[in-house]
Length: 229
Length: 300
Image (cartoon, rainbow over all chains, first blue to last red; front, top):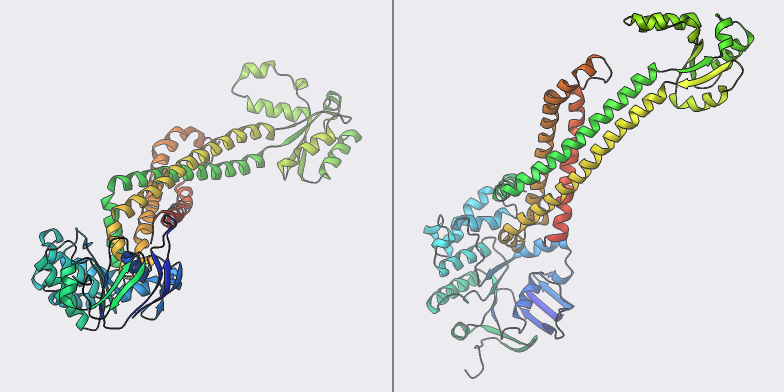
């Protein structure tokens, strides 16, 4: 699903590359954590997968697309196959829960009857069936993240990228969000989650890819956050 | 592409920055109004030129001797001049006007002023060959060829006065276009600014659209259409402004001039013939500005 081959990414403003000769592969249907301290290259890696940036060297493949070589016209095709969730939710404050979710389908031109069918389904899936008409500011942080996950998942992406999705949430709520991501993973969607959250990584016992100074320093199939912790 | 979605986005954008939208529309309207005014002046001048140059003549005044002694243009000098004029390229007709005929015309023109008529003597008026040119621009070569010839007193061109008049009108037209241009520049900057502002106020939406894989057209079309709406509404206001200007100003102030047929009357047909130009210019310039702004300033 994801394949990076000798990928490096340098920024003009920095002498040290953000990613340095990274080779890693994530299979279809896998659930993997991407961990590492701030500045280790986690966000850069996610940005490369979304083609927010192109790699300086090497090849990035997502769902059989050579992401670095995509023409501007074809970038939307990539992003329609990849859902994203962020620490800060990024909901639209002037739209209701249901409108936030349907917005993601409207802007890629899905017909109205499809939208009116799948939006309630996905809201039900994330446990917000009764809150379709609420505004984001009326919801708790955990609920807002559920809306964001619903929006990321509503177009049934092959891959879900989550960048610190529990960073703003307390432990119990974080756990619920993880259960939701697991449920989404069980539908066949590959999940790659960048996180700092030791407790979650340790309790899930999933694959862990650790970055440090732009290098992959660890890749374990059933890992914990820190060795010996 | 779902049109209803795009249009609701356009409406939201225009409503959210309502003051900027109004400023953008008004500047566009003034600019297009001036452009329309300039185009109408051009049309009027063109029609006046056709009208006037058809009526004006180049006049070859004959010497005092010929005027006194050749009432029928029968002498060899006079008929030779006439023959040469007639065979000059660009000359349509040549009419001989004798001293008596000139005096008769003088009496007719000034019949309202008997004092003037009493003072006038036929001897004061020269006979002339009145030349109608198919192309008024041929005058200098004719003047050059016939000035100083035997039997010719002088060669005058009534068109010279008209040329001065038209130079003044051309100046008026150019001034209108210059102001329209400056105003257009202000309108362009405002459109560009409004689009940037609109994109900024909607950066959250645009961010979500990019990440969910909306195509560039889907992301940018609402902004582009906002600009085009401003251009078209500005164009409509400009046309309304021209109609109001005609009724309230031109028709009243220039009523006498129209009556005397000095200036051809400005009709609604004139305004409606420049209207599509204004709408087209408004829409396409706004669209182009919007497109370039999005290209240069807004990341997709």
